Image (cartoon, rainbow, N blue to C red; front, side):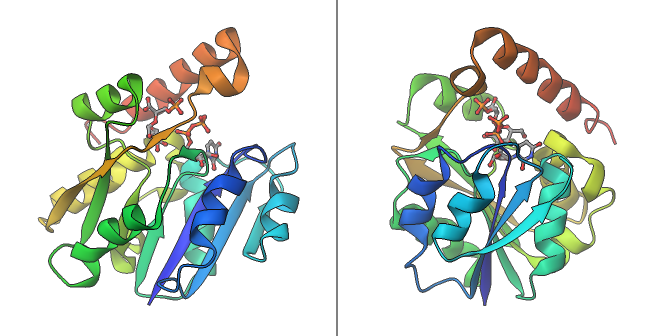
Length: 207
Ligand SMILES: O=c1ccn([C@@H]2O[C@H](COP(=O)(O)OP(=O)(O)O)[C@@H](O)[C@H]2O)c(=O)[nH]1
Ligand SMILES: O=C(O)[C@@H](COP(=O)(O)O)O[C@H]1O[C@H](CO)[C@@H](O)[C@H](O)[C@H]1O
């Protein structure tokens, strides 16, 4: 049994695309959108799709949002998807789940390919930094400091699995990309948010 957890911070404009694709997929026991203290209509949009919505009063960062989804869920398998994917199709979700659900791997990581140059390139140089994953619940439960990792959470999950010597597989996801910070926030605020994200990721390196 598999729960889809979507951490979402100010994603009212982007969520419908992802939820339209996943809401009728019968591979999920439950779909949980964690509204991470958004100031827009993220929770209302998620509610309108009939999925479960967990609303955090204050922004906790991506790690905190995933931790809230973990606490609310009960299944042995968890799927994580970003809320701002562009081009998502059911076959992406199925391909990501397959190696974990059939016991080959403890975690899968989705790697963008032929989505668009900027996001393909980012994951070529740093495949550990992806929001698209399927993993066994105990892997996330045993992760130290999940709540406070913010954007470091993706690298922290990968490092944790490697430290435990668990099998991790990369799954290529063709024609998939995501909205970039600069597109969401404008150039100046987007670049500032990007630098803050890199800092949060750097803090995980070497831990
Ligand atoms: O404080 C935050 C920041 C991001 N996210 C979510 O985490 C996912 C990955 O974020 P992304 O890398 O796309 O960064 P963003 O462009 O949202 O800053 C998206 O679904 C975000 O809405 C979150 O839940 N809390
Ligand atoms: O590709 C990247 O540089 C970052 C930032 O994404 P944007 O281009 O700002 O949407 O996204 C990756 O890293 C984030 C931090 O770990 C993750 O949250 C995203 O899921 C991942 O795609």
